[in-house]
Amino acid sequence: MHQADSPVKPEVPSRRQLLSRLSAGAAVTAAAAATVKAAIAQPNPETHALPAYAVSGREAGMDFYDFHGREAFAYTKKDGNLAVEGQDGKRWTMLIDLRKCVGCQSCTAACKFENNIPEGSFRTWVPDLEIGTYPEARRAFLPRLCNHCERPSCIEVCPADATWQRKDGIVEIDYDRCWGCGSCVNACPYDARFINPITHTADKCNFCAQRVDQGLRPACVETCVGGARQFGNLNDPNDPVARQIKSEPVQVLKPSTGNQPRVFYIALPDQLQNNLPGRPTLWSEMFKEAGFKNPESETAGVWQIVATQEADHG
Image (cartoon, rainbow, N blue to C red; front, side):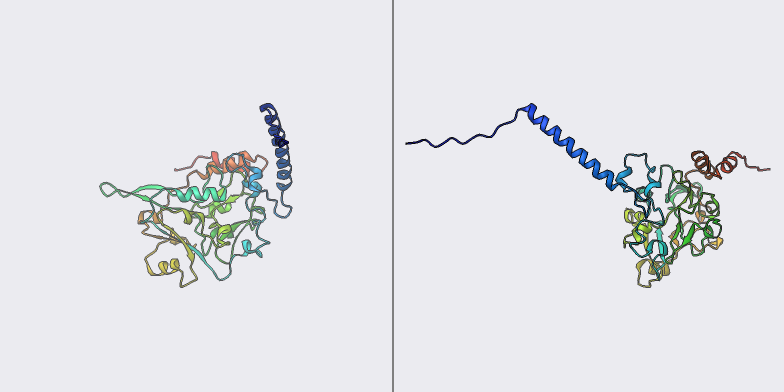
């Protein structure tokens, strides 16, 4: 009677052998990943854009120049020039109900994340104010952003034709044309524009056009915890926002300018309608910083001089 052959036991590697094999495998995987990433992360010759991950690890906002809307946004060709021309027949608008705003700054943070805005700069912000006098003083919040006016004063003053208005009312900036002269910054009566310290060009809110064109709401509207911000089509009589604007008392900022803003407010205090709180940073410091960071710019010296001049109150 023969005994059955004993099964052959697999070789169990020692701890040192196991670690050696894992290290070798990890090295091969890392090398392959680096090769693939380097190949994929090459700039797109049509858009000059880099994927977000290809510039990760930089200081906040420093990757703005690499892949933020170069050549009027990367998806322009795919969507039939939609990013440039906009949606025909629509008129985008924003309605802000100040009775619901709690000053949480969720909109401010969402805007910076969505649009990759450099530190110290803002496309939208919410000043925390005190209005009235004792004993009637009270706290107030006033969300601020580009008003995407019907008659934008920023367009006609641009010497480079870098600012234009789409068919749906969104006012845009071509960062390849803009040379950062600041004419539009000074022409805006709402302090909605600023000089981007990374690109040295004008910058502002664009209603998150890259989201709106894909059927989404602007980031600030999406994240408003109190539902104070609403976004809609003013040309659509069935749009809830359009109906509310036409049926309730609404106000705009600085109506006497003639710009005809398309950002409307509910319960806007009289004290703030024509007396807007300033930007988080002084415009003179903004231009000065942009000039210092780009000393070869033609406007650098000009803004440095302006920034050091004292006001004459005599």
